[in-house]
Length: 498
Image (cartoon, rainbow, N blue to C red; front, side, top):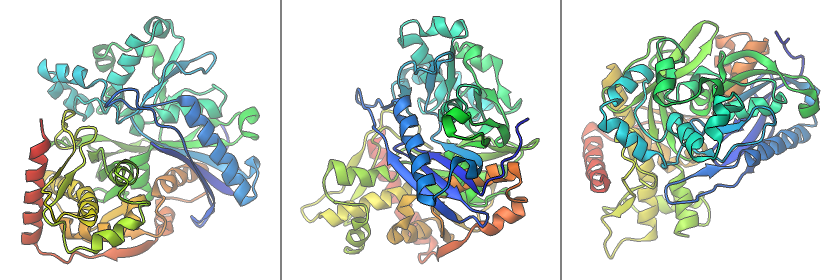
């Protein structure tokens, strides 16, 4: 077993959908270095989204160097590394050379929607849901992996000979950092593939067979927090323990201190991801939510209920880059508050279909209720409200599923810098919204898990003291207002369902 590091900082690699970041954390949880690089997005056909694995690695590695340079630290000053990653995005590479085999198929990609529709038509979705906690949707990895194996010439034959490795992006980064020595993933990522059995907490042989996946391509499942190996000195410049790997949304849940059942967070990134800690027992959903592993610490695996919203902050990017209505996201708050309401406008951002609870890949976005008096400010406000509406719908479904209301909604992600959005969210969910001082809770969660595994921090109690709340947004509207607003939103959503 690799030994714990002796350095001064924990390094967190936060590999997201549109950018890679590296943050360095000191013992008080303070950020002493950070760097970010965007990387290219590829859209070969409508509804298809791809990344190039080498572009991800190059961007991530550049941020490692940039963050160390900013902090004036060397690789040997790193005590341990934690990894948080975009989930479900599917990678395939050559075990011997590390060369990518085809593109990485991104979680947003809808190319396998037809395959998922066939699964539903055959009546197999209830069985899949019971085994995996997930629904038959192109969002998850199994159909993406099957597509790569079937569509790339020779890939299936090579996989069956044991020559190829599959992984989500955590597996790819660990492979790179260790010079190809480790092929691993953790339960939080494995449970997003449709190949992981929630009860056995391992790859399900019947699931692997159902999707016709050669078992040899699968990574080993290791605990979320634990020293799984060390970086290769020729790659990283020092031998440093890799001590956590976790899907980005579960990382944010941990970074927000949601260690106990019933605690709830929402991350406002490219999409929005609302997660509730449900404890050691998986809670099946009857309302279109999904059930997954949260993390594994020692022998204990925590679970989550999740509402996955495909388009959150990306709607603001669309206002900026697609419609040219704004020059920067920072303009949206002033524009939204310059009008008393949306003037009856609803924007439903179903750009890549709708996720929970509808799981409709054919839905497409719409701006409804436009009149001659509709202005740029009304559309911008409707876009921000759409983020909060989608999230509020998930909160209310979760409350119904578990039978209790959370004391607060803890929020993070770039869009939460928008005070209008946070206040509107509090009004819609009817509980206080807590915004932390450190918005990079995804990176913090990965760092905390790595620090726990290596003795950098003493335990969950100490980790809990590191989180600081910057502002609380208390609800200002009554239940009647909330019900009417959500009723009108659901009417708008029904207009885009195909």
